[in-house]
Length: 318
Image (cartoon, rainbow, N blue to C red):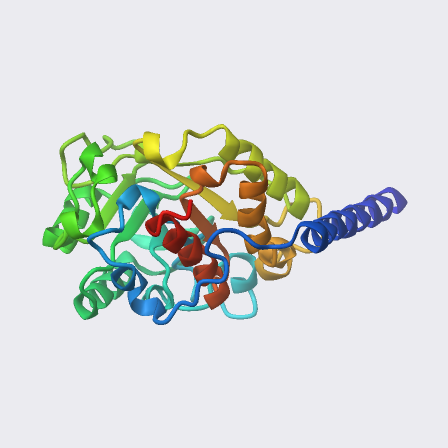
């Protein structure tokens, strides 16, 4: 028992030390980067406001959400705190400015996170289509994957194509070179990542997993994740020369050997350092690699941080 308590005390000290390191870095280096002072007038239509004819797909810094459809997962106050990564609906996230969605499904087409389930993926699709019907120039990356340890939903590729129809942007690497204006009226890049079923083929309506990549590590330590994100990002090609989307997740994860296993108090350890991360990308001369930036419990400032850098790219500042 004493050994367990000792390990937890050491863990708490490690977390506090890492948070202090990030706070010191923020105090010394600051959070400024090209576009960090950009004033976002309307989050609902920020892509339209940046001019679709000038905004290239590859130069967008996409604000994303991690485990996007978990706002109603599990049982409130009982199991929900262990799996909830967002507190607002898909529609509300899109209105706030989110443009990359991370959806996990199981065999019966219900959204899930691990063993916990929530509403049907139909709700997600309906929210996406509602938002698209109310806007004209907003593009969304919709990633749908079979959750780890679950079976693929049968004929799900056909389901996605039927539900999203004319909104789908076909799988074509030339899309990265195009502006939003050049892909309109198509609006959705849909990445389907099945577990065992055949993967989407080039030239089809859906995109395969190779077009949306990331490097996830299982840690609840904020500086460890922060530095890991910088290291993995530094290994990617600049956005101007690659033909895939790369995602950085500004999140940390509850781990089994820690008494705190609820998502929010753990992920909040890194939540405040989103702008610092973007700033450090430029300090380390890898700002030209950042593309998708995702978070738990997304808020307005996170969206503004991403859109500001997008604005700087559109204006040729970077």
